[in-house]
Image 1 (cartoon, rainbow, N blue to C red):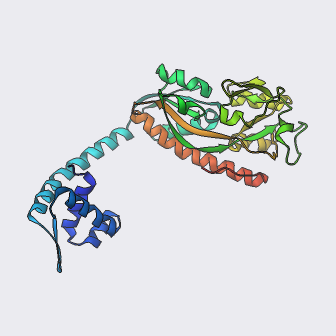
Image 2 (image 1 turned 135 degrees about the vertical axis):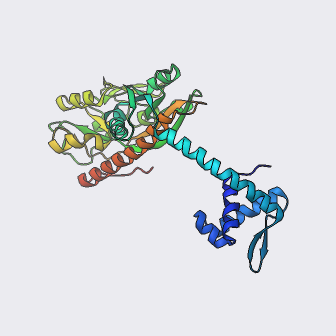
Image 3 (image 1 turned 60 degrees about the vertical axis):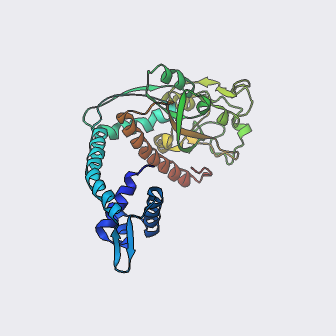
Length: 324
């Protein structure tokens, strides 16, 4: 048998108000939920804690014992919760984080910028790496956290993954490219040109075809290696802007290039690949307070970038077919 902190708070509130409706309102829960919680506790203890009288609710003798002890414990619990919250908010030290080319270009820098305004002693050691390098970096403790496509990382028993959401990937090219300005270009037509980017995990690789002009598909590993393998998005965009290569990226990462006309989005007709964005860390190990704050802010910044991508897709009249 065990009592939960939530149940102690429910008992205290009910004893204070003497009314299920008022106690539920004070706690910010529904009256049925409070009733169910109290009944579950009484069943667990094997005796009633409150007498239900025509005039209201009154604690039983055993109820008063529980209430008395709860009122001594709850302030201590609240103090402990506040101490932990303060420790997390004032987290200090250096966070080592790796990120793929897409989150490393905008999402992680935006997160670092936001946190630098919230935490005084905040430091980050940032490594941009392919998703395929995440496991070695994490296992060797070179980084605590990796941000990027989860790919096949879920299958690694050494790692723990947490999905953030799907980010649609759009093909893009130089404005003078043969495919620029065409409507509903087939994936087959796109893959006749060199692809620039990172190696793609199997869930993206299966949509990239088998045309060797775009790159090479590793049948054994299910990984696609583009013709121009580059680590950073800045390098990828430069190659695309100056050659007949094409690439893929979330629209928010192309926003400035599209505005200046340096790059254009290819209007495709096939299924749209997506980045399965998430965080990865060592299995069985809790994240540090600093990493916990980083992840929370990362999720917030990612929602903002996703909204920008969706707005751009709408403005460009492009198909949006990805959920969360």
